[in-house]
Amino acid sequence: MYIHDEIKIEDSPLGTPYLRPEDDLTSHSYVNLRAQPDLSAILPELQKAAPLKEFVIALNAQGSPYETFGCEKWSSDWSHEQFAGFNTRHGSYVDFALCEKARCDTPMIYFSLIDEFRSYAKANPVYDVIHVHFTLRQTISFDLAWWTLCVWNYGIGRSDKEAERWWAEGLRYFRTFLKV
Image (cartoon, rainbow, N blue to C red; front, side, top):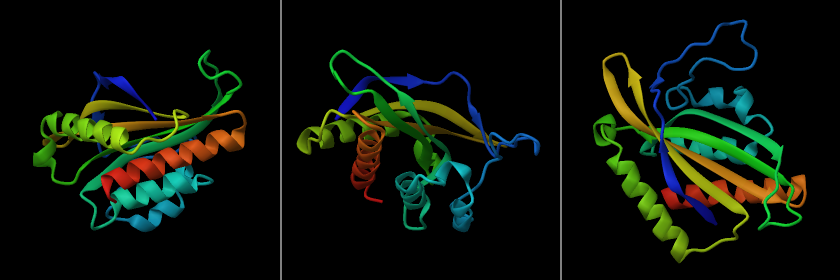
């Protein structure tokens, strides 16, 4: 697994709940999956992306300490000189935070979580065809502010099927680490 060294901190905060115009067919308004888990069945990002759907549902489960604020999945052409013959990359991101907002009023808890993940990855190595990087940003809602962690997960392959396999494996790996 390749974990990017840099942790990007976004300049613009995420406002939640966010609303999209009804005529915007490319996105939708915020959906609280912790409060309404059945809505995961209709979210377009989770259609035809079973591993992402399982990950998002697990993060939002009642026993989980996390909740999500957005996600997406895509596939693209890819190339890098260190991976000759690998031409496809599947990727996704998931924005999530601790449910106890007081615990994530600074980004430090996420820096600790990322450090723990790096240690976990060293002790439990997997193939370098799984790539992960993280971003942090402040999230605001009415009179409350907290930090949100975004995990970007990629799988690369010599075919679409192979890239999707490694992308899915990366999600399962991170889910196992989070114990959700």
